[in-house]
Length: 356
Image (cartoon, rainbow, N blue to C red):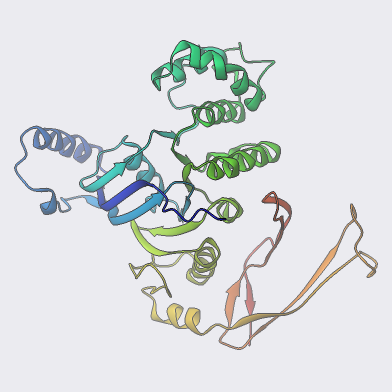
């Protein structure tokens, strides 16, 4: 009999807004003003507005996450993804809105952030563990598992300054993975590891979700989003422009970005449905494009059956019943039982224009 009891809420983000200035002089000036205003507030939170030279990194963003759920966050560089994780973690205060975290939280946002270069990998485990509130007995209990997971047994006592980026990633990830947080925030860093380590991380995160852990994953790797997340949202200029199931939202994001072709940014829309780009011609092309795969044939190099371990030819016939549209074709094969990628082929070069 399946347990139908409601899941406990892990995270609630309400009307979250964060503003930034790009000019260093304005950053210093506004920073001092914000500190003074936090000590002696003169305005209510609802009166926050942009000052000269500022922009919204996040604007009126709301979301909820329950135990055992994973939320993917995708969007172009500069869309506000990392800022969202930093505000959720408490590293950056919001200018408006509220973040409620009901469990202990661990974040892997910057690779090696907080690591002392002269410390050894083993010392880093103790330093990070202590900073996160673990006692000596608790650190001793998980130390071997962390070293084993990070695959750093031969160099764990070497200075961190001698570690590659990938080695620092493995160590940082292994540390937070073994703290058993109720909420885990990860920003893109899994893409830095080698394929074997990425598979290990995905397997761990699937087990973590099954045990009731909640996850917010920021990634440009759309396969990771599909494999790990229950829901996904797209950010553009700090606002949610689409949300829903990973498949629907990723398809929206891919189609829109190819149609947009680095043109004007997305405008704010409802959390589901078609995008509303500022260019009406682009918008019309997006809405009326009708692509369908008529035939897909996989064969060996000689035209015969494909064989395990050998090369294959993938012949895809696509028809378009709408106006011409620019598209990129990517073929992927995933193992459903383990969520591991078996094959990924992407056409290189400029997008194809598919005529009616």
